Image 1: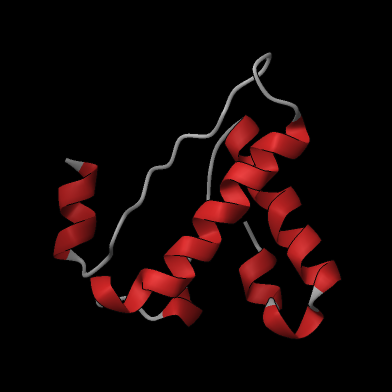
Image 2: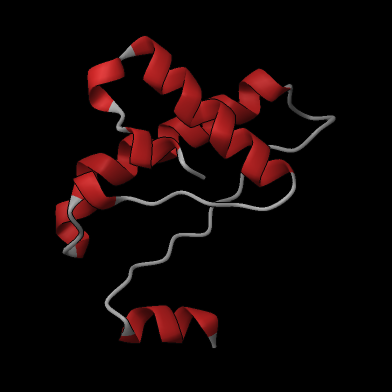
Length: 88
């Protein structure tokens, strides 16, 4: 139901998986999510999505990983990540 509500509001929802512990370290989990975010940014137009308006959120470990990923990206390329992007 939530996905349908998002679609009706004009939102595209992506619910990714990432490799879990003990099969992966935090670094590997971040790599999984970084690859996903890069892919989403590149392919956003094919889903009629503005790549500058991607919102990342999560809960529990997913929220922590999302925050770590965005902060890491902001530290590596400050001009590529806005403050609004980092508010998870």
